[in-house]
Length: 115
Image (tube, rainbow, N blue to C red; front, top):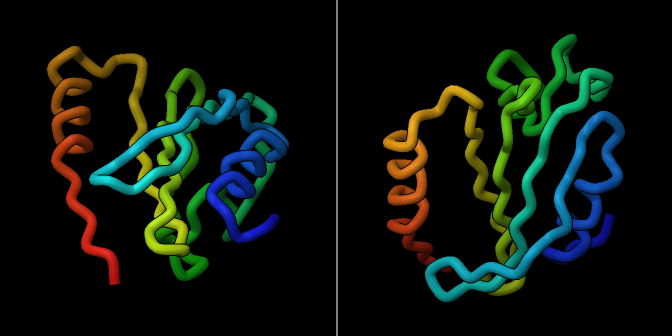
């Protein structure tokens, strides 16, 4: 996988066990990028530390789990002055409209201070 936003957005579509929507253009706080939605298939097989994980942190028990069945992980990949910044949230099927609105408000409030 290459170093660009497009490279990572495209790579999500090739992970065995994940369904990814086609990446769409987004802008967050003036920074452009791509957004995609990920859903784990029942056959999810990518394992890290004995558990499925999409975003391992220090390779241990703090690894963020992938979306479960029927969950949707929204992923925004931004180009921040040549560096990729990834933001994600998981929406479960039982998430109320209020919860989804709160997630949207949090996302809309993001301010990025480039190094």
